Image 1 (tube, helix red, strand yellow):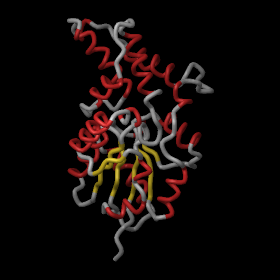
Image 2 (image 1 turned 180 degrees about the horizontal axis):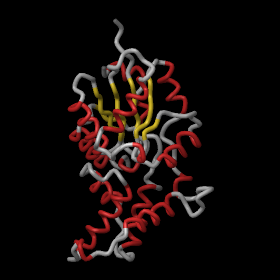
Image 3 (image 1 turned 45 degrees about the vertical axis):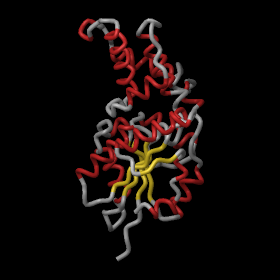
Length: 261
């Protein structure tokens, strides 16, 4: 019996597209607005929050940073009158823009971190692939279909599953890709850029130990500005469960995949 071909599932933000000037900028804008311009989180502040592994949702991350700022000023959460829906609305106005029918926000300027030819090389090597992301479906499809030109990609987005590090969405993506295959035991690679992504695959390993799960960390561009920052971030991914860490997702070539299974 031949071994089942591997499956690669990609996170999107920080892996497929650079969101340092979009999602993360929108977080900083939102926190600054709701702290009345008293505090604007730095990229390191945001990284430190996300390194806790439970703030994959950027709306919730924004709210948490707002709460923590006021707590640092001696104000308790119970006395802070925050409206979560208003936080989401403000964030989306920055990220998507002010025209719901023709987005003109930060999302329009996200650099791509992968070329369509890379995904084609996986297909040519009989490697199935799909996406599991905490981004909204509309935002994910904006880049996958609108920017990369993919047709009906396999995608589990924010609306489809619990947030990371819950592995439900990851497993659902795998199940979709295996629907038409007789073997249901393909090794699975999950490629992500955050601690929450690595926690997700660790939980999948615990729930389904009969399958091989490989956590692949990718360093987002904003942490590659200095060797020290790059090494510190890579270490955080490895400590969270990454089996290997790359500077770019395209370093996970078909040949490299074969060496890891």
